[in-house]
Length: 359
Image (tube, rainbow, N blue to C red):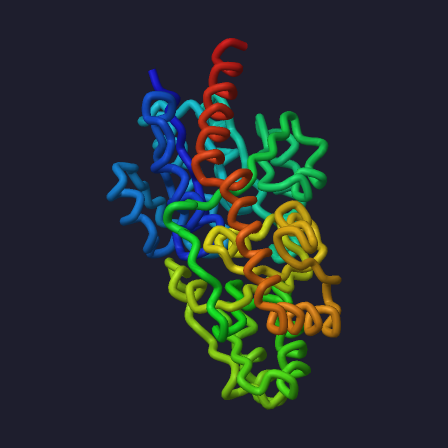
């Protein structure tokens, strides 16, 4: 009999954790795992993708502020569906899911941590509650070794790297004159300001240089104003958040993720899978996916000059760019495929449910 698993997430909008959930759950072996999903709030635009794959989605109709009422709705759902493993994602789901699961004695509760500095952007009063919860769940899953380093105190700690659909993100030849591309939410973490400064330095040598930024978030107006001040208004295109980033990656001659901190870097993995030369910073999980001069370039975080020189190096040497792109694709296929992630997740669910039922 398959293990009944409910994944609880704050919302199903187009974000990294949400997109990954939508892509990996349909790949689970239903003979081993029967997955369902519940989301706390939002219109859940990705719910239709899950439902099309035969995965039930439950809407708990919470408010966007911290709202304890869904605890009771979730507790009833856990009982009705006889859930064996409750898997939570993102901080509100972590806290509310823990209390609901304990209320009805769900056999196993596990939480995935998708980033380093996980609690930095949340309300101060919520952080100690979440810290208290993470020490009491049955297991913590980290998306990278860098993330895992922050949770050594967990009862059980598993590293399951994020994966990429290597068939969906099929490789294409690197275009000779495409734009530099960055796919990332417009937040302080992602380092867009550094990228804009680097592009401004390169314009004299590369007068046709273009930059495309795909994302959305609180810093968009600030970044647009900064681009204008740097004289880049006609060179920088701001694209909306999109569910499918492949059209943007197809155009890219170089992919850059200039993050100041990063749990793993799913967007960089997707670019690598499509055979794009990537430049990332030497932070956290990005060091786990890119080796300098082997399958990409790695530069010091926050260093405008180093980033500009790395971009210039790939623009000047297209043979190097293609060599790094080919190596990047091979690395992702071998180490970061979505199928590999799904098998790891299946085994984890089954082992967790088996350990708890046999306790």
